Image (cartoon, rainbow, N blue to C red; front, side):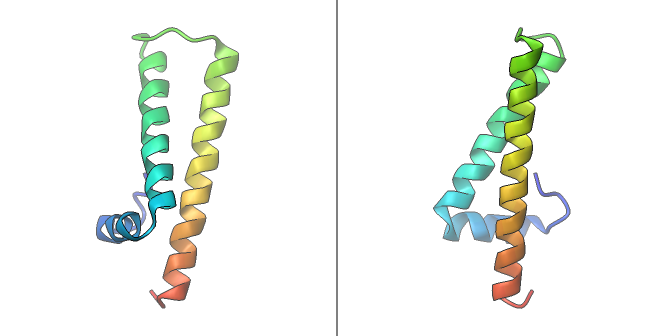
Length: 76
């Protein structure tokens, strides 16, 4: 997630910000579940799948905002 940023930066923020770390973990979990459903290895109603996708997107947006704030605060 957040491939447009250096992974060292993401790792640093994860170490410094437990909330950010939880966001990344939850996003990765949802990404895995969505992938399993889309590949046919798991079953889920379409409506539930769409809810997971929206939550995954919300988490990505929140994580992105945290990274941008961090970069601003640290003049990066």
